[in-house]
Image (cartoon, rainbow over all chains, first blue to last red; front, side, top):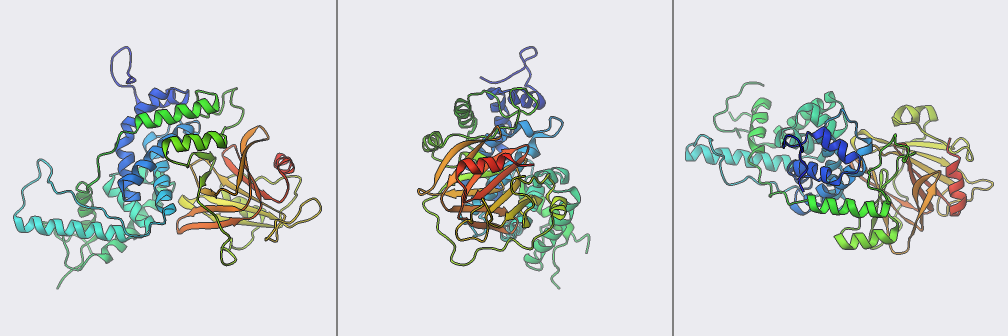
Length: 201
Length: 255
């Protein structure tokens, strides 16, 4: 049964779902699981690098998060709190499996609706650049890879990234700067996304 | 001359790349998560997650299942990773063996005050053991620190075989999920135990303790028996050559 507001028929607010879950309402918690399953799985996939570990990590994180709800501050945002647990699970899973090989992140084949159609040459160049970026990101050390992946591939704000990683916002900023510099060093000279002009050093 | 991509270009390219990464469709999880939580509630005899502040929950309780139920449930869902005591998760592995060398260093010993400043949580010392002979602080993942207090053997405190120590107490912050794993194999015994009103576990036999750090796993071979429990956001891991009853007594003297 889907949990819904019985009076107006609208979905319950996150805070209410969390409050119900804290009081043992497993259906309310299931609603939170359904809402955050995509972002939790995507985060786990970006860290663990394969679907099986990502699924295990996300599911384990949801169970642990339920039992940790007593320590969740009601005024805090649920998403970064959950993603912190997801991240720990995915990192630990990758480590416990002894995986040291670089992640095999790939580009999808299709373009999104509304994208401008580039010339065939520009499309090839653009894809090659993005593939080079993915390879370079995958080869970064874990701490650099996670901060870049969460900021740009998961589209978290700096504040959210800080919450997820359990560090200050300034630390995220400095880690990100260092990670971007290392990433840039890994990209071949002359590699540049199509249609972009140099605007800084 | 070929120029390197700028940081601003790189950031834009990363954002554009992120939307194109091929991520598999997330599988359904709600039913499995609900089922696991309900299974846990049956074992715990309650419908609620730990909720500090309620009269029914004088201490933060841990997600502890007795080992028999653990193995049955783990087999049912295909994962033997269910037993969690605060910041420590117990895993079942095929075997554990002592390290070839002397094992990793824990770094220099520091004072109680220094350790307290670094830890970020209140360090507690068992009154029955008195001031520790050494204190080490270990950096673990996501800027969390673990404190290790060590006492040399003495009257009433037998040496832990293969170590110079009579007792080791590790304190781990448990407010943000697992920091460490205990890898147990068939030769280990694991029993649920009550420590000062909190659920805990008593582990007999050598096993591995794995701390997760930003630079990789720190694997420590544990030679003594271990009492593991969680209280007020800190997980305690007492290693000793004492028997279970005396170890629980020591734990009860935590100041």
